Image (tube, rainbow, N blue to C red; front, side):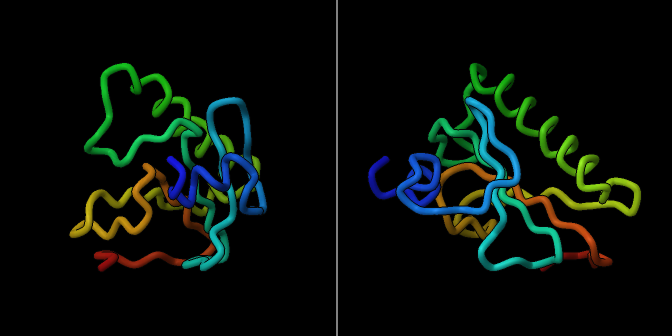
Length: 114
């Protein structure tokens, strides 16, 4: 996707502070953090949203979630707790149409979120 912001980050066309990376997944610090720790995790494969997942994507999304939890453990934020958020579609608050998950931590998070 030529105009996808996150694809441009994956392709190193736009710089990002990387928190996690492997051949399939990228985790980078959000440029507008909503918590002291705010990392965005994406598959490097372009998938528009959670609603667009296919059965063939389940291993990738499972691996992505495992790496979110592993990153939380590595940053030692797992004991106090953290939140993982996915916004799907316009009414769900999705602003970048490349599936992504926010890891938020290091402050007391309220509920409901919005």
